[in-house]
Image (tube, rainbow, N blue to C red; front, side):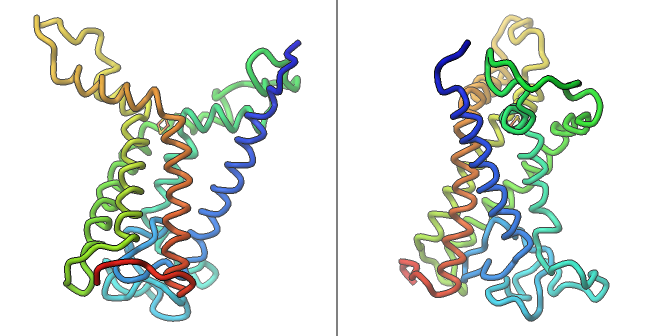
Length: 256
Ligand code: FES
């Protein structure tokens, strides 16, 4: 009986997910123009290996943890550093409680929105095929590890060839790390881990530090959807900015 435009939100969600997940997946496989000293795209950070040749704008060999891709790397796979640690960000997002709700509505149409009759089918929730989504709580550890590297790369972007300075790219990378921090620590699994699983915060007669942590996580958790979208868009923007600077299409304003 709903007469409002209930379909706008799931449709916009579907378009947004296809656009941004599609772009980032393409860039993760592409791995060209992901570096412009001292900036590195979040699609390939941290660089465990890097291609030695054939990939313009790739991370320099001396900047990768273990240098060039090894000889045993399968020839049919592109030489992209995204295959090592950055994929954990995709696993984290794909299994995120918010995104699950959003893309189930957009893709399965059962139900497509609140109080809207969905496509009739034998929907078994996350009990069978989708059981793997419960791995989300473990992908959280990978996401926190990645955050450490993204902050590290953000601060490393204050130094070009050992000289201190700052550029628009530095700011873009740090904002990226900050937004991803807001997204990660608003995660339902994190909120559960640090306090949600407790029955009582004041049982020993005083308010525990855990309670304050849980309150902060709750503040972010309430805004999780917002952080999910803005951080997703900003990751893509950060990559695009570094791509354009690396290709020489735009100039990075900086103090170097
Ligand atoms: Fe969204 Fe964990 S619930 S990241």
